Image 1 (cartoon, rainbow, N blue to C red):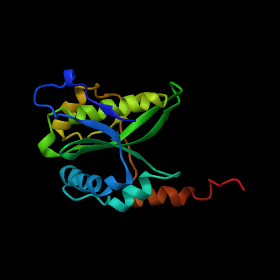
Image 2: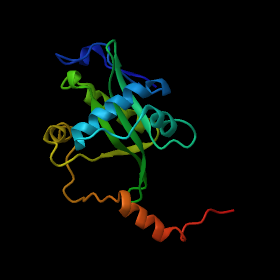
Image 3: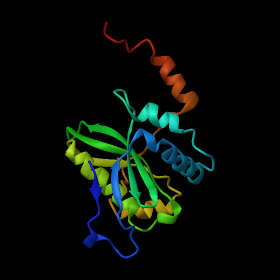
Image 4: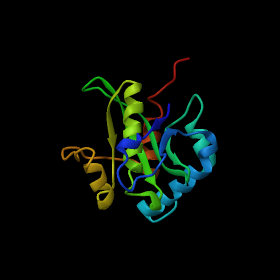
Length: 181
């Protein structure tokens, strides 16, 4: 599936010929380089994400995520990594936007908005009724961008277990989950 911005809806200063499309395995080097840049912006260090991990974890039957890329004559301008979600309260499918990144020189030209809109349309075509994302509290620029799309949820607290805490949880529960024979 491919989304092209209609010429009449392109704001002044937008990227001409912008296309949002599903990523291909050959996009791995460019997406990984952008993920490295996002990691440096987010945490001050490069991400562990590589082109090899992009291909192994983002494609095939057991993929962990999917990716949309924004492209123009200038090459890949940005990407959105996402995976499916489900909400039991509303008994509905949705999408969790894990990463959104636009190359610095193409920011504030509608590329990020095109990626999010393309992702919403893509999700809806698969039965999604919602999209969820998180953003670091200190990232004011990103928070302004996202608030223009949807409100921040004040009553939700994001919790996460990484590294040793995740390992302890998994070790303590390893006897519980058994695969059927």
